[in-house]
Image (tube, rainbow, N blue to C red; front, side, top):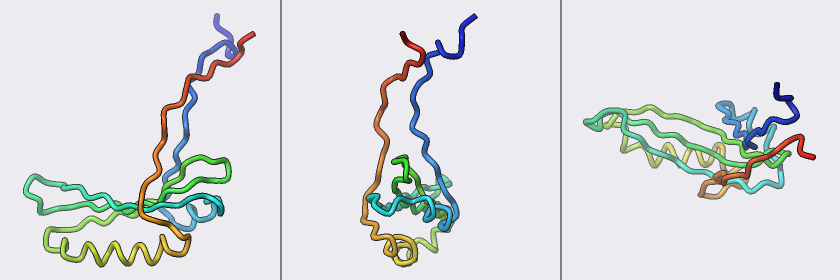
Amino acid sequence: MIRASELQIPRTNVVRVFLQYADFRVRLDDSSPVHYDAELRKLDSEGMKWLMTFKIFGLDRKQRLIIFEYKWDHSYIQTLQRDDVIRELVEKFANPINAVPGRMELTATPMCVQGTN
């Protein structure tokens, strides 16, 4: 039988995704760099339904990546409003925490071996 202390466990970076801005804000490290980005995705083949995901990236107090997401499901007709919606989201969520355009991403981490002699 293998003891728990002899198992090789891959080291993972936990990424927490928040849908409530207040929860994200409470956990955000005040000295963390903060970035925002908006992603667009077609939900159908005709391009009549779209999903925009506005994200704010930052680090918590333990230097783990945290993300705030705001999703806007909209139609082709509403695509003309995208720039205004993004501008409103930036003013409401990103500007108060001095976020700049961009993203934060994880890099691969080496394997962590526990219980070695």
